[in-house]
Image 1 (cartoon, one colour):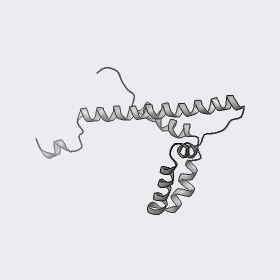
Image 2 (cartoon, one colour):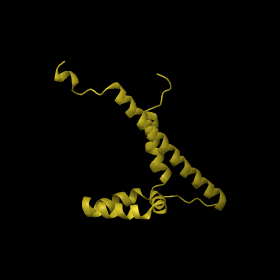
Image 3 (cartoon, rainbow, N blue to C red):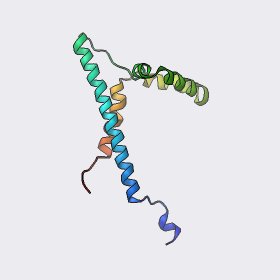
Length: 116
């Protein structure tokens, strides 16, 4: 067997594990996104007004230190303009869309199939 026979090939078992891993990540993202959507809808039902749970607010509530660290690292070592107009803008999006969108894409792109 020559070297050219091995180039560019991925074993079938590794490819299957990668697809399953991406599908699981997709389902997790989709379910967490749906949980945030349900939280927004329940808050709307309880208060009577719709309030978006932004990704930045959710990250701040979960772990403010990691948010501050990420901002410092990106501004200091990557580029200062990347944080303020780009990432700060994305962090204002609803968290359910920011997680649910990629999750839905992964679930549709890499469906879990039962059996062999």
